[in-house]
Length: 201
Image (cartoon, rainbow, N blue to C red):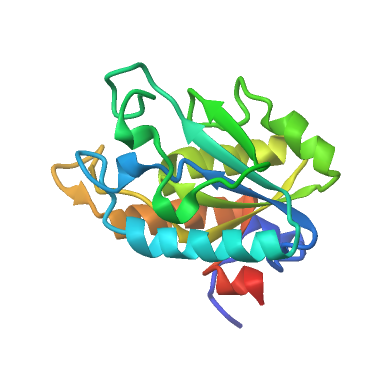
């Protein structure tokens, strides 16, 4: 008998197959230049951006609905529209006609038209990628469940940054924080695809 613990989704017998582009909408969270340099630069930003680019390319080929989400802050802040940080990463530029959402909170559903946009697609599954794993990606995936959507989060197309430990004197590495964020989501909130290849196959 295996001692491996099971997630709540495993215990309930849920199908854990990642969503396909043909049946889902693709939601790209905060793929913005603020995460490429400066105080919010993420160690894994570039590998994740390359996977986001692959997802976008295949989604466009498959006519998958795409929604780009960007965080916006006051002018002069890292996310201000008056700065370079607000712009899309080169790998994640929105194309003409693709839907876009601006948010002011981690959860991309909060105070935005994201739910209404998704409803117009007629699809009840969402594929989520972007930044940061523990923050806006996690908050949006959790809220997707509340809104009636089945979420797949692409771990390889997401990244985060190191943070000071909340209970000790050490630092939680970006890699560990990302792993914990994905593990938490996998328990109940989302199916986790290891990489874009698991979605594109």
